[in-house]
Structures are given as C-alpha cells and as structure tokens.
Length: 475
Ligand code: TRP
Image (cartoon, rainbow, N blue to C red; front, side):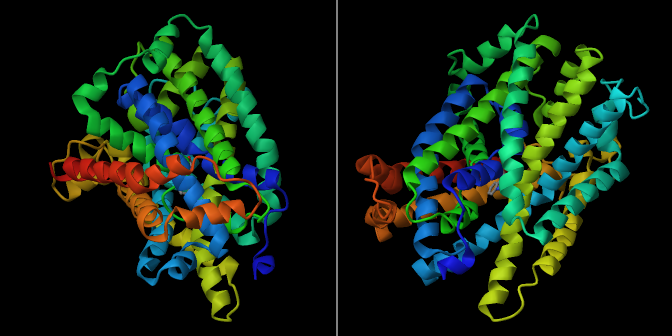
C-alpha cells in the first residue's frame, strides 16, 4: 500500500518539498505586514512563543498522524475516528479558501517581476517609474488584476495536472537557496540606508506596550500567521507525513521546517521594516500593500540597478509563491484523485486539476475587483463584503482578500489545531505520537513538554484565539 503511493526519495527531498510549501507569500508578504500592523516586537515575540509551544506540537502531531495512517487527511481522520472525518474535509476547504486570494497575490507578484524586466530594457510604459501611483492604479484596474490572476492560475494548473513528483524537488533545490541569497543581498542594501536603524528598533526593541493595549488582537494575528506560514492546522503536513519514510526522524524534521520557515519570515521583516523606516518615514502599517508599495520605493531609490534588483526580488517571491500554491492546489486535486482510485475509477488528475482551478478562479474574481478594500467609494468595480452585506466591522480590513484569509487562517486553522491537539492529549494519548516517532529508532525527546502542549497549552491557547475572532466579528 505505502509503496504504491510512493515515499520521498531522500530526507533532503522531503525537507525541501516541505520547506518549499511552507515558505511562501505568508513569510514574505504576510509576516512583515502583520508585524507592521501589530506592534513590531510584540508581534514577533508572540509569534515565536506560539511557534515553539503550538507550532512544534502541531507539526509533530500532523507528521505522526500522516505517517502512522499512511493516508491523506480525509482518510487519515476517518481511520483514527469516524467522528472526526469532518476535520479531514476542512483540510480540503481551507486550501480552497486560501487560494481564493493566494492566486491573486501570485498574479500581482508576477506583474511586478515583469514590469521590472521591461524596465531593465528601458521600456517603461508599464509605469514602474511612477512609484507613487503604480500600486494604487494597478489594484483598481479590475481587468489587469483578473488577467494576471488568470495567468498565474494557468501556470499552477499546468504543473499540478502534469504531476509534481519530479519537478517540485528540483524546483525547490535551486529556488530556495536562490531566494535565501537574494534576501541577504536586499537585507544588506537596506541596512546601509540612513534611517534604517529605526526599523530594527521597531522589530527587535523590547516594547510590550501593544500587548497591554490589545493583547487578543496581537495574539490572534500572530496565531493565524503562524498556522498559515507553517502550513499547519489542516491537512498539508498530514499529507507530507504520509509520504515520509519510517526510518526518518519526525521530531528533527519538524524542527528543521519550523526553523527554516521562521528564518525566512524574519529575514523578510528585516527588509521591509528598515525599508519603511528609511524610505517611508516609519509607516509600518501599510497593510497588505506593504510588500508591493513600499518595496517599490526601495528599488526606485536604488536607481537603475533597482530595476535588476526588483526583477530578481519579485521573481524569487514568485518562485516562493508558486511552490506553495502548487501544494495547495495539489491538496484539493489529490483529494478527488484519491477518492477515484479508492472507488476503482480512473484517477482523472488532469481533469480535476483544471476543474478546481476554474472554480477557484471564479471565487478569485471578487478579490480582483474590490480594489483590495478600496471599495466602491474609491473607484473599485465591486464592494467589499462589508459594503455588500451592509455591516460595520472594525477588526479586519474587510476586503475580500481579508475575508477569505480570516475564514481560513483566522478560524478554521486554529479550530483544526485545537481539536487535533485535544484528541492527542486526552483521547488518543501522547503514546500514539511517541510510538510513531520512535518507529525510526530515534528516542522521543521532551515527553513532558509535548504532553503539556497537547493537553493544555495548545487547546486553551486556540480557544483564546477563536474567542478573539468572535469578538472582532460581533463585538
Ligand atoms: N505556508 C505557505 C505560505 O507561507 C502557504 C501554504 C502552502 C499553506 N500550503 C499550505 C498554508 C497549507 C496552509 C496550509 O505562503
């Protein structure tokens, strides 16, 4: 059975594929902008605490469940307990919701990369030169947004339809180290700019004031970000675990994935925060546009060389984005493919990859058309969810992007993590995880720590997060 499904060729291949999925727009786009909106250092601190006390336990738990059952989420949860099959279904719905905005962002990144490419050759009709208006004009141009989203989706569907088996490993082997080097180059460039220091102070200077004014707000932002960035709280890591060889060390792999992912997020922060300090008078709270609008300022200030740097930077963001979005589309496609195979039908991979892509494209349209929250008043083609439903919301940006984001990373991922860790802590017991991890012959470390995480810290922490979400929504 397991041999038929295949396993990763090498442990390095596994790590690269998992890191390729984890490192994406969440790290380079989401992390800096959420840190900017939620008090800098306070956000970073809460994020790190959550990664250690929640992320590690959930990561080990998901890998263990996946490898133990040898199945993807729906079948895995059904096998463990019939009553929890719905958790498996949530693992298909969440990637769907994420892609309803991830594809749009991927398209935008592609447009930026190509704009800089044309600028290198002095063909500036795309307006990279006018950095003050480029972003604002682009996001209000519904036709452009739809066009680039569609192109990005076609590329994704193409890869997934063809099967990612050999490609993803090669792709990540070159793309990930290249991304790392490029991040370093831009970090150094930003670091020597006058005024950059304030950005580091914002990010690393001890300041817990934001926690006193809005603890729950920071907590829920950091928690959502952590799940999203680590690809946790749903099925992705269970699926990866199901392909992991029995001889590999689960705990060690979990630590490596978390460290790599967190490192890239912090590196992205070390570009964007000091850049905001140096070029935007410390305007850290730019929200979802931060990666686009403020980074464009940075490249603009480099002069001609900025065109080349900008092209390289957005190309690498594109690589990070597509290695993640493929994995999301793959979760949805393989759900149907697995089902067909189980029923003795033809897998139909191509067909379902295309059907999924088309349906998601339709759900991407509102995200493309509301001008990222500009709303009707500012010239967008359609209203935000808040405008359409005529509700007054305060705690989120209330555009379509944020709406999909809140449902997935805000509610479903913490819910999934809460239920899973509660089950491990109290029903299935830690022994299940320990046993699975020790199959490889490596001794399980930190039993007490993990037990406390599963029994108390994660479920209770996640209950707080969900409470904070409900408050924002109805409060
Ligand atoms: N972690 C990716 C990012 O940071 C997004 C992602 C890929 C994801 N696969 C996932 C999120 C599965 C949740 C679940 O961009």
